[in-house]
Image (cartoon, rainbow, N blue to C red; front, side, top):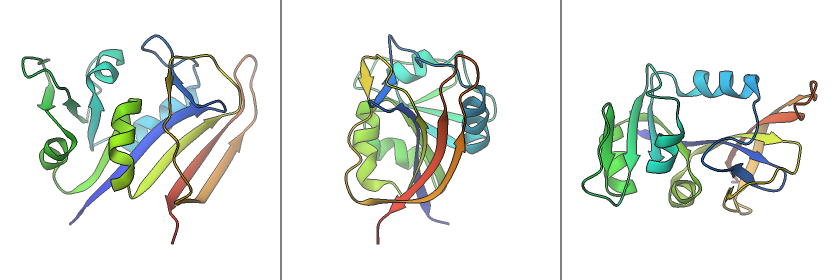
Length: 161
């Protein structure tokens, strides 16, 4: 079985993916989808993304990219670069969960992007790198706004042929 690199990200209309080390919105359906897509799979992330998690997420491996050779955290596997992280992850689906710098590194190698489009312009300090024209939409599920939560869409992107 070959390795399949999948980027999973939620981004506001203006490209925001984070603010102050956290998600700048709370969309329960997005969190549920994230859990379903990542369960049982290795997750590759940067150190700041790992720090933003509420703790180790059960049922998933946490592979953390960091330039700091002294950094460690209980339950985390550490890699100095993307190639080392992917080697640790092994075959099958490998979920890249952020942040922006890690997405930029992984994008040229991705087989799929699972994107939650948040239909609002939301202030933030971390932004999704441009995906470029090499992607085509293969699935979309729209969700209407609820109360103070913006509308959103679950979108699957695959490389354009």
